[in-house]
Every structure is written in structure tokens, then in C-alpha cells.
Amino acid sequence: MPQLVNNIAGMPNLDFVIRKANLQDLPRLAELHCSSFGRQEHVPIMLGQRYVMATYRWLVTSDMTYVLVAEAEGAIKGLVAVADRPFTNPMFKACAGEFILSIFIHPGLLFKRKLWKRLFRRPALTAQGQRIANYPGMAQMTIGAVDSACRGKGMFCELVKATCVFSKERASRAVRAGVYKTNWPSRRVFIKCGWLEAPALETSETVDYIYFMDPSFRNELGLSD
Image 1 (cartoon, rainbow, N blue to C red):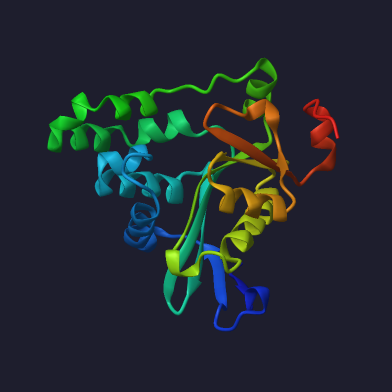
Image 2 (cartoon, rainbow, N blue to C red; image 1 turned 30 degrees about the vertical axis):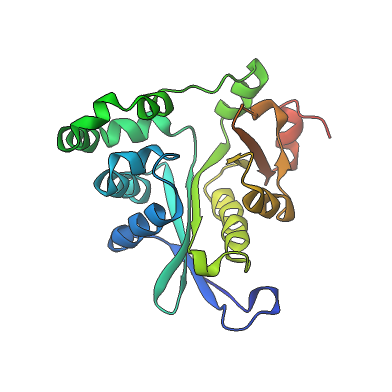
């Protein structure tokens, strides 16, 4: 890395470089994130751009996470973030100060039921699902976003492929990603890239896909063909 990707799907002027993000990228990462998700569907955005920035600072600097970006014409057009292991509690603890500040700046958030419901929801997974989600060697994609002008042109697919390579180098044996069931464009990307749907991780809102860098890991987890 960085990795040059040329003319995806035979379309001109789509050359871009995939590289690891750094602290100088934080403003653009937060900007791209906030432009990609609705305020009502995403907790960090409900808390404001300062909190979004804090989450990316942790994702970029933590030893258990990494962020990859797709850069074209000197600008970041896409991103994915991945954690080597379950990340929700470590990230929340790391960003707790910014969370408190966000509530202080916007006290109306205290009465926003949807915020608290989403913040403290816990997926009702089966015993098998919990085992898979927490099994050592199972990395997790935390977020993915692509600039609206670059969607549908293969950029997200290349970022997804890059996470498999990068996570394998970090000794992960598989990567999983949760996607809203209604988000068919993203679901098609994971299917196209060879990720397998994992019914044991399904919730009322999301479906998970897994890519196995280590084929034997699938049997170890008790997942049938």
C-alpha cells in the first residue's frame, strides 16, 4: 500500500489510490461520513460533527483499528474502517469526553429517545451468533462510505477487497460487516466480492456478510457450506 486501481469496470477517469488514512485526513473523513448518512439513522451524526471527528481520530490511531481511503485527484472519495475485534465499547470509552460535550452543547439530545435507543441497543443474537461475533480472529468493518459522485463505479468494491488483504496482514482470519437490510447497493457489493451471508448474525434491521481469509475458520466456527 498505497494500491493504484485503474479504470474500474472499463470506465475512464476512475483511477484512484487506496491507502491507509492518517490524522491529517480527519476533517475530510468526518465530512464524507456526515454527507453519507442521514441524521436520524446514525448515532455519531446525531451527536454532531465534533463527535464524528472524535470517532475517526480513534479509528485512525487505535492499535486495534485502521481506516482505508480511496483517493482520486488529490481528494478522498471513499473510506472503510475496520476493527480487529469488537469495537463498540472501546470506541465509546475513548470518545466519552466528546460525547459529554455534545450533550452539553445540545441539551435537547437528552430527550431524544431515538438517540438513546440506538446508542444502547444490543442485537438479540443467538448463542451461535454471539460466538461468531466475539470469536478471536474475527475482524469487523465498522463503517463504509463513498462520495455520491463515485457510487456505482466500483470504488466501494475495491475498498472492501482491500480490507480483506489488510486484515489478513494483521492476522485476522475473517472480516464481517453488518448492512441494513434495505441497503441493496451495499449488499450487492459484498456478494460480488465473495462475502457470504451469515444468518446467525442477522438482526431485525441488519444482515451480516463474512469474508474468510482462512478457509478452515468457517468450519471452526461451525458454519456449514
